[in-house]
Image (cartoon, rainbow, N blue to C red):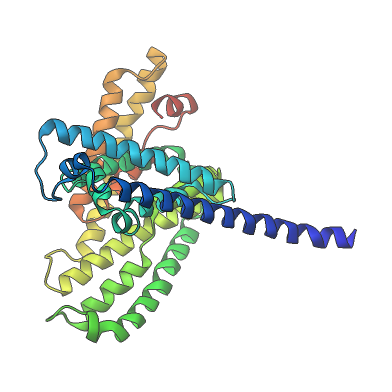
Length: 341
């Protein structure tokens, strides 16, 4: 029995290593195929004509068509790589990040620059980014909608301590790193303090949406531990963006400062809880009366997500924070939450 129990972890490790090797070989073979295909088509007149210069203007119809092609490519590759990494026990969001690297200048742009330019023309990239940001805002709204604030009762102090620790430790490491790179990387005229703050804050900002995706995939979003982690990340984001505002203010690049941002965030969250939440409670009443969410209320919720995102960005923090808070103040009823989602 002892030999059997000791052999099980070793077999599991071998399977994981084998899966990683298979994934690496698949990616390597696919990139070699893409390189071959690209080289065989480089001399083709149609490719040269369609690719053209990276600064060429696109018509409105061409812009729309290229945008649809870019979105389809991103969705397809993200899904494929996401499924592959899930087979080796990793969150799908990690595969989606890898897919972004493969489609970006680091891989596709390096190996097949003309193909990368055709797929992601300079005119298309801002539109693609805008579409992604809208999707991200509504996704964070759904995350806030799924998170039950009741699970945080009595645990807010824990969330605050975890958040502060997750900021202080990497920030201290970033400031220490800044001392060594200041002379070689700091822009001319920038003092050490704002440079060190900027490097430290950059090291301490949490990838809020990525963390939310992992918690949802692992089905931890409705778990007390998941709720604390997500609340800590939200506090972390506000703290980090406030410190970033402070560093830019010290550098003379902004009139905002950290105290004002913290004050505005407090006013924003209070307004959402004391004004918007009672208004949204009428959604539950309308739901009970009609048996479904009326179209007018759906439009109201959508507009609320967009406006709360705008206010969050206007204050000086990430727009997704406002969408997340909008989800938190929504009425909590199982059927209503399901229908809105």
